[in-house]
Length: 435
Image (cartoon, rainbow, N blue to C red; front, side, top):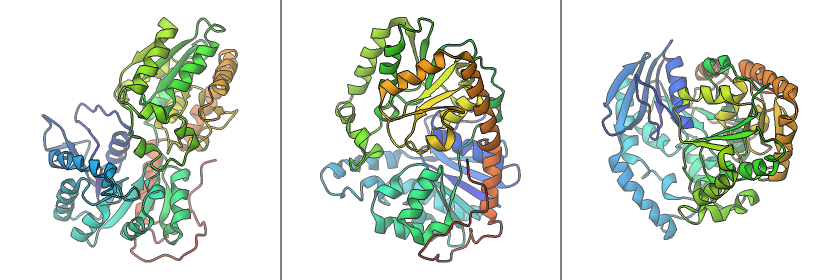
C-alpha cells in the first residue's frame, strides 16, 4: 500500500530523531514500522533550517511550510469576537491550516496514495477527498473534539472517512454514541511504546523518587501532585520528586471548551493569566526546597534514565485524558503508577494490580496512594512487574501497527469502503479489547 500520514503540528527531525510531543511520537513510531512492508510518506511541518524532504528508515519525510497558516491562525481572535460561534471555532473550520491541507492533498494525488491517515484534524478530510476521490481516508482522533463541536459539520466530514480510529475506548465510544451511523467504522487503536522502554533497568525496590513526565499545564494536575508530595514529605525524608516536561499551558478551549467538566472549572483561574500556573508551581516547588528537581522538556528517546532512577510514577491528570503515553512508558519501565480514574487511565492501569487510581484533583487521596507505595517496596516491585507484563502484552507499537495494518486491509470487514452504515451500532469487533 501507498500510505500517507498527515499532521501539521508534528516536528520530526531525522536522522537525529528528537520528538517531544505525543503526536510526533505517534507519527514517527507508526510510520517507521509501516515502512517495513509499505510505501509511507509523512507530512509534518517544516521548521527553520529544516530540509523540505528526507528519506530515513524507509519513510519519506515531507515537511510542509506553515508560515502562511501560522499567520492565518491570528484569525482565532474572531472566536472571542463572536464571528465564529463556539460550536464552530476557527480551528474547526477549513481555514485552519488550509495551505498545508491543500499542499498535502496535491502531493498525495501525485504519489497515488491509497490510504491517507489524518491525525485529529477532521476538517482536512473534505480537502483531501476532493483531490483524491479514490483514496481511503482514515481519521485518527487523539482528543475530544468530535464530541465537543458542531454535530452537523462533523457528521458531514465523517462521511468522507472509511475508517475512524480513537486512541482509547473512551474516544472511540464518544464518537460511536454521538454518530451511531458510522459506529461500525470506529475502532480503537491504543498508543504504544518502543521495546526499548521494556528494557529499562529500574529499581522501585530501592528508589523513593516520585516521577512525573508531561506538560506543566493545569489539566495535567502537577499542582495536585505538589500538594500531595508536600503532605507526605516529612514522613518520608528520603523521598524526592522529579518533574520532567515543558512549561506549556494549553488554552482552556482545547481542554474544556464549554465548561462542562466540574474538575476543570475548579482550576479555571490557572488559565486566566499568562503566568498564573507557572507562578503557582514556582511557589509550591520553592516551599519544598531541594526535595523537588524540575527538568524541562526531554526528547522521548532521552527519557529512559529518568524512568530508570524512579521508584514510583505519578500522572495526576485533572481532565478526561484521551490516553497518556507516559503512563505506559513508566509501566514498561517496571514502575508502579499512580494516576486518576478519569479519562482513559482506567483502560491502561489496573487498580490494585499495576498501580493505584485516585479521584481527579484530590490531593489527599493522591497523598495516601504515595504513602502506600513509599511504605512498601515489595508492593512497588510487584505492581511494576505486573505493569511491565501488561504493556508487553497490550501496548507496544509493534502490536499497534500490526493491528493498524489489519484495519487498513479490512480483515473480512468493510472497513476501507465508502458505503453508508446503518443507524444502530452492534459490536462485532474481531480484535480483542483491552482488559
